Length: 443
Image (tube, helix red, strand yellow):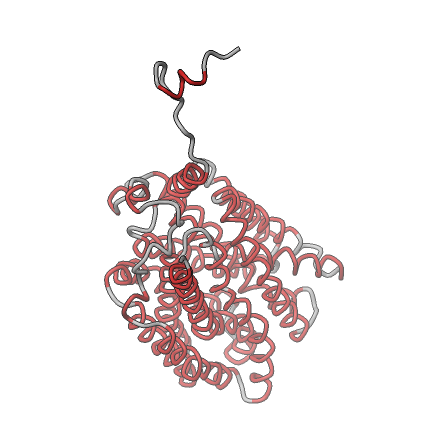
């Protein structure tokens, strides 16, 4: 009678995917909306204050820089304390920060609001990555991709909604209005679905492959001191920082480039941004599945695809190139969002997952912070994006090459153990044993 056991497994699996859904909703409103509204408000802010592109995009440096600094700290906290409590506090912080844009009248106030927003939104992103990664092994990439679809969904409606709200009320009011989703959807749903007891760590081995024992898996895990002392960890850190540099540079400047430099106008530019994030749904799920199959090599392919997306920005005024850019950029962006949890667990195991994801998220947010203002500075000094785009192509390729020596030790060990468990090899009977004597000599 296996029914109760199977029912228990189904219940655990259902619970795991409900947690993915809670993370998905939190990512939409607490990380996705605040991130995707920024490129749309730059133009109106420049028109009102006369600030340069480097100045307005510097808010991203502060936003992600704050997340990078505190990401290390919060990653360690997530390993020790309730994810439920951390996500709630971080979500409230993000909502208050968005409302505070109503008070912005100077550059330093603009930066201060962005900095606080970064603290809240990046913390939620780290927490969701950790809690989902701890619940899944075999389908970790797919589960992470599903949770982080929140950024794609936010990207579909945020640019167009923000553009409409800016036209009706102004950019300050638009940002404040967009914080409503945190209060009404993100916080209540997370508190309802995710419980303190058993939500952070599964009580069963449901997060692991069923045929592999905990003792066998433990032999492939690494202590935190071994992780940060390894060359692999810092090569991953370099790779994700470089790809973050490219990803946010394109994301933060794309609307202004398409609107003002290519001449497509704000509505078309916002629609392209929405299309990119709609396509990134396939990117997150597709690359999540791809990473489950190919691990590090799949991530390398994604990084090289990012370089192709930047190349397509040069002739983007041609309609078919614009469509192709939207597809390639959407796929590459989706893959770049789900890479850190997979690399962390595949290479080092789940033992110190909060700390490793926290530090690697800090690395990628350093790239997020540096890219947009550097690209903005190159534009302000040269009057175009040509040099900046060549820089981004080179950085994307360098990111992929940085992973050449990285080995997915834990993932390879798990796959080997699973194959051995699925196909046990019986030992050859020894000479003189009864079975050997009965079989007789081979002819």
